[in-house]
Length: 263
View 1 (cartoon, helix red, strand yellow):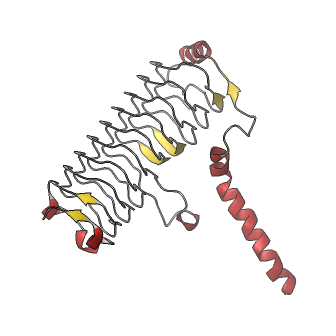
View 2: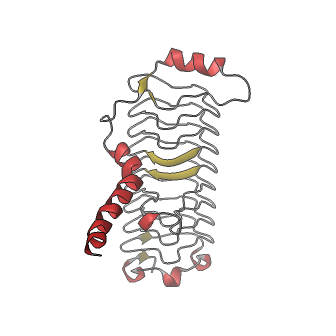
């Protein structure tokens, strides 16, 4: 009986490692030598040769050092690609599979990512100014990213805390720039958005339940029918907002006494 008890922590540790291994691969970028380098010309050739109705297969490719601006990746499978710092501005990634893509510091300005799959994507300090992520699946690490003027309407970024171990995987948007962004009807429940700038953002109908919005700036934002049930509002700024009286769950928000509203 004692032997069984001693072995239980070991088994639990192995299970936890397996659950965390994809995230470890993302955080320790460059340490796994399995990405296959590919040039811009090779990408375009592969896409052009893909039969109609099939997904161009770009899984596990290494785009670093290449200029991928303006390429039509529509519907492509770019699962677990390495794109750190790559210029993808103006490219088309609509309906693409970007799950586990590594894209910190990438230039994604004006990129079309409508309906893209973006689960466990690394976007730290990436530039997504004026990008279109309408209806994208968006469980991403985007700390410090620039989403100014971006369209995130109807994004599916809410964490399912009943379907993952210890609720580890959630959308992280701390220190992001979301000024003038469109988040209408976006589901970002359980996200962290600490110190984010949401000045003049459209948050009509957005789901921010249980989000950590500490020190986020909502000055001039439209929060009509937004859901802030159990959101953490410590030092959050809500000056000159629209729709305060329609906000759902504001009376349940945590640390609301420390939030800053118009007098």
